[in-house]
Length: 125
Image (cartoon, rainbow, N blue to C red):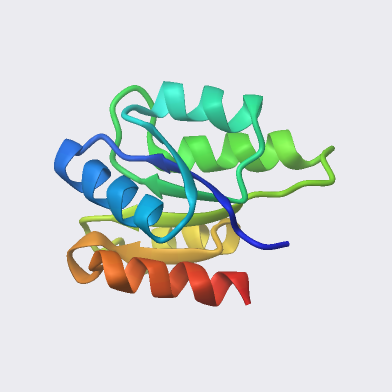
């Protein structure tokens, strides 16, 4: 299924605005949640083809959100792809756990808007 709808769950205003603007310019339908609780509510009330999920969020950690989304999707035919984003290198155990439930794992400092779009296009192929 082609990626057309994207939910960005990101509390950093600068990064969130940059991702939303870049993704919209690339032709995606994008919504943005600035905290974990709102992001989880949005992700369970509507299907998104892709969720860009920050790990360090107010209200809830990204890992909790991802677990809740995956549990919610257990009885659904539609499953969102989840790309986990963080500013920090995780220890190997944490990173492996994230990678098992996530479709991709990115370090924000290494991702430009252009590279993010390339990664989404790779997930879409």
